[in-house]
Image (cartoon, rainbow, N blue to C red; front, side):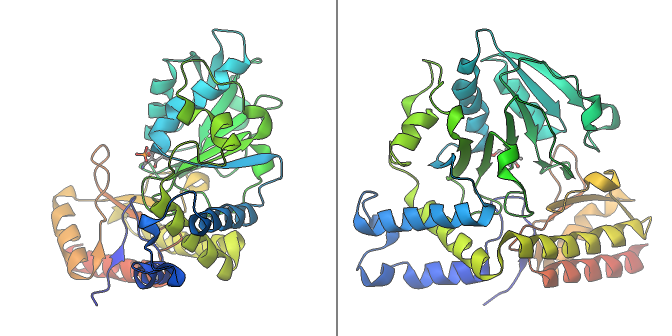
Amino acid sequence: MKRVFNFSPGPAALPKEVIQQAADEMTNWRDSGLSVMEMSHRGKEFTEILETTKNDLRALLAVPDNYKILLMQGGAIAENAIVPMNLVGKKSQPATIDFVNTGHWSAKTIHEAHKYAKVNVAASSEDKNFTYVPARDTWKLTPDAAYVHICTNETIGGVEFDYTPDVGNVPLVADMSSNILSREIDISKYAVVYAGAQKNIGPAGLTIVIAREDMLGHALPICPSAFDWKEVADHDSMFNTPPTYPIYIAGLVFANLRRLGGVAAMEKINIEKSTLMYNYLDSTDFYKNSVSIANRSRMNVPFVLHDASLDAKFLAEAAQNDLVQLKGHSSVGGMRASIYNAMPLEGVQKLVAFMKDFEKKYG
Ligand code: PMP
């Protein structure tokens, strides 16, 4: 079988052993005679898959008992509307939401929120082209905001929070789509965490929401029932038919993660992988990453070649070496190596070796 190292930002590489297990079980899940895709979401088999998946996620992230885990659809972009529709109702209208703008995904979230609330950009790193996370003491928060929103890892810019901000009694909400399960976090510091699945969790189509119980039950009347977190929680993520197959694959990923030592073990490897990348990038003028050192993402490593006319050659030769999907996002150009949990250290070693060879050849 052809082996490639897949640096896609998402949908991203999944652990090989998970893909293999899914293949083995594809036509006949545990001798049920059924593929998971064919199972009733209310049947005994799928109910077991759903419960195990949620319990494993709870264990991996040490989610406290007073938080609900919701398995939803729509992705993080839908949550950009779903979050305000569920939370601004806690306040008298019009409510204000505070945002920290650290790049592309924060900006998209802010744009959507205008439909539901007054928006205050409490801090932004636009002054330096979104290459850092503004220090907490520079944020201009609204005392009575409905919530404060951050994106803990900007997937395109490669900018990651290196701290969990203290925002007092105002609920802290985080888009963790591209760094959930990659490093240890204290869920109790957040009121709501959400993430699309297609980076560190499983196939696209599943959205995880982890919400403190007091965040439920405030949905605006315009909020579709299927996106009202209280409805979803009261129906154990079965208000509508959940994305059953992505949930099953997420369950395999979680079980695999637990076998490997959980989030702490992943974090160690992720530090090792990203350090290898950044140390090399900093050792040469041939490539460059512009993110401030403290906020360099462990998950997404964007870089440019000193001579952009070599970009196409770089991508073609990388692919010949089985290093694929390294093209940067169209809005920023250059390259991006996404090195989520499923990327083994060996893949990063191979990429760095290739980059060194490429530099020797064209430098
Ligand atoms: N937030 C972040 C941090 C992301 O990386 C992405 C997707 N790359 C999104 C939001 C949007 O996710 P989706 O397209 O699944 O809605």
